[in-house]
Image (cartoon, rainbow, N blue to C red):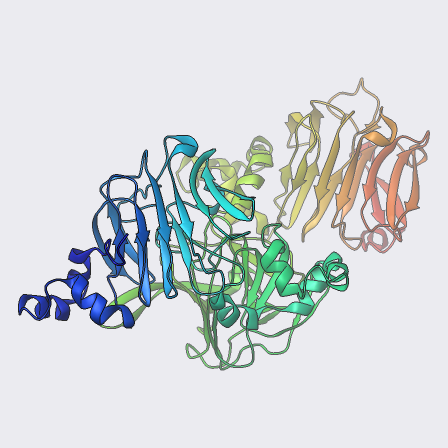
Length: 613
């Protein structure tokens, strides 16, 4: 193999008109001749080493190169990547791609068409690319045409094997791990080694080590044992794959940074404290006068632009704000300090290089810009946030919303709210859930609109949202909205359901007074299998939340166990466990219209004073 023999001369000349002119004038016989004499010692665009329809051994060279084992039609520079249209897809080929001391990007798929395609698929482990001399510490990268979840990465004999649905695409020699880049490409992903120098420059300075260790207490033990040198080392080597909670934040002043994949809380403000028990965050500043630019990564990104009732970047109009790139509507969240009604959403047109770029803009009602996002078509709705004192603004496409809609009891909501039925019929909303998401969850001036979220006959995790809502772990078969009564498909026997509260009045339904089945005795759910079936109740707010069951106070006993509160029947059958509720003191009362039902609240709940108890 002769060095530079696979340099794509046509692309090199097309990307470098001055060299094409020199060749036309006879100064060089070809682009390759100029490259060998001068170009390989300079950082040039259009340096592409591409293969044929057969098996190839391709050696790259130069300061910055793209290496492709298959035959390509066209390629042109496009920012960080080149845009490739492949003539062949490597089916049946065994190509060896060899890096050089410069920056190398190895392409295992194309990206010029609307549907990028992977190379080397179709013959299992009989066709693939073997990548030599991939430098884990430089800026070497591997391009794939899909998303991280499309591929399998397995370390075998200190090499990384990349497959898709069991079909081998590539073997990267001498590398034990690859992670997706923190910046999205227009199509596909880039893979780097954790030791990559670019991360050390652009990501590590913004990684909040104390917060990471606070959120992941077991990592401290791994550091003490010498298995990892730091929280950053653990995150890059393992934590990002495990979905560990991580934190990237700016410093005082203007910041621009990105980060690898992960479950990240991201803000331009220095985070000074994180409480893993509550999720509460404290920051050193509120960003007045700052301009911060950060990008989302693969995984769930929570962009914090307000906290504890205080909006960030307020004070200098549009001169201080966050510019957020790569906001993923299916996963990401914009975390704000106020309810959604306190903000304005507009399209802002930014001029750059003579071009107009529309951005989605979030401002206070007074017009002070807080954030601009590089997605002008974005629509935001409100969900509960995992950070106390904040609200999560998400796209209607967000996966959390899809999960909530699956458990939302549409029939009950429509029956309870005839005006919503009319609005749906008129086409104002597609479903009752959409109306609840955009309007109903906030209640109205003269009434509260309760949402109802229910599980199935199996084990479920059910949560809800809104100013007032009900949570069932069991399946419902019939509801009476006027009487607020219901029938269940099961009584929860054999089930272990997790019911997760949220801001607002959450009523955890752990029993049935059988108002619609008067022939049936009022009773608790989850009775019949002792401690093996119960409801695990999380995020119970003692000042606001209720539990509802059937029967009388004498039918139940309460016991503090390992800082949890167990609720059992009088004969010892476990019904519910309130997580971190060991210090609660439950009181009970009944309401006149539901004499066979029992409401349980903590002794600190203001409702007891209203009732005179």
